[in-house]
Image (cartoon, helix red, strand yellow):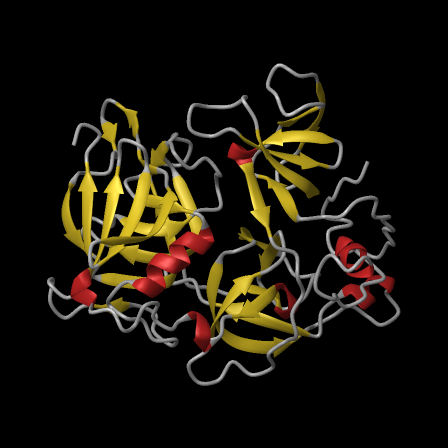
Amino acid sequence: MIKITRRNLLKLGALGASHGLLPPLPPLPFVDGKEAPIIARRPIISFARAISWGIRVYNEPNFSAKVVDQMSQDETRPVYAELTTASGSSYNKRWFEVDGGYVYSSLIHIVPWEYNPSITDAGAKGFWAEVTVPFTDSRVAPSLSAARTKYRYYGGTTYKVIRVVPGKGASPADPAAAFDYDWWYQVEDESFPGSYFVPARHLRQVPQSEFTTLSPDVDPRDKRIEIRLSDKRVIAYEKGKEVFATRCASGARFSADKDFRTPPGQYRIFRKTPSQHMYGGAFGDNDYYDLPGIPWVSYFTYSGIAFHGAYWHNDYGSERSHGCINLLDKDARWIYRWTTPRSEIYDRYTMTSTFTEGTAVTVIGVNG
C-alpha cells in the first residue's frame, strides 16, 4: 500500500514522471534526509488529500462496505479512478478509488502535484502564485530548519508573492541540506501581516493569460448569474443563454442564533481579489474559521458574501458556508474571469466605481 505522508510527499512526483503520468518533476533524492522509494502500480489520475482525521477507506465504494483503513489529516494518496455510485447523500454520490480502497468525496480535497521553476525576482509589484503541491508549510524564515508559522497552504490556493530570497540551508555536511531549497517566496497575508516563507518550487506564477476576461466581446450588461438555493446551482447567462453551470455549497444555519444562510435577492459583483484570508467566529466554536489563500473571490454583497474556491470540503450541493457561495477552484476562477469588474494582473482588489457596473447576481430562495 502506498501511503503518502510528509516524509515521502515529494518523492511521488518522481513516480508519476517516470511513468509519463505527470509533468516532469525535478529529482529529489532526499526527503527529511531519508530516501523514500515508491513503485507505481497503476496510472494515477490525481491526488487525494484527507481534509480531516479518520477518513474511512472502504473495500468497495459503499458506506455499507468493510472499512479497511483510515486516512489521517493531510495524508495524500494517489487517485486511480473517480466513481458515481448509489451510496452517498442525496446530492453527492462521488467516490474516489485510492491506494488501499475507496473514499467518499465530501472530505477529500483533490490536489495538484507539480513542481515549478523558481522565479528569482518578484519585481516591484510582486506576482500572484498558486500552490501546486498537496500542501506546503509557511515558515518564519527561508529554510526548512526555520520554525513553521500556524498556516499550512493547500493545493489550489493563491497568494501574492512580494519577495524572492535565496534559501538558508543547513551546513553542507548535513545530509538534509540536499533537501533544502535554493529559492523561497515571501507571501503577503493581508489580514495578519508577518513573515511567511514557502519554497519557490511549490508555487506556480499565475500568468497574464489567466486574468484575461472570458467572453470579452459580450456586453457586460448582457451577462448575469443566477444562484438557485433549492438545488445549489450556479448558472451564468449571456443574452439569456446558459453558458456555464455548476454545483455550489451555500450558507448554513449553524444554530438558532447563528444563521448564515445565503439571503435571496438581487445583487451585483462589486469587488474581486485573487486571494483572500478569511476568518471569523470564536476559536473552538463550530462556526470558527481561519482560512488563508482562499482563491478567486468575487464579492456581491457588502456584508462580505462572495463566490470563491474552497479547500476545506468537497461537498457541493450542501449548506455549509458562512453565506458565501463555495465552488471548486476552477469554477471560482471562471466566475472571476467572466464577470465585471475586470481584474488586472497586479490588482490586490478590483472595485467598481458605481454599483450598477458589476455583473448582476440573482439569488433565488429555496421556495423561489
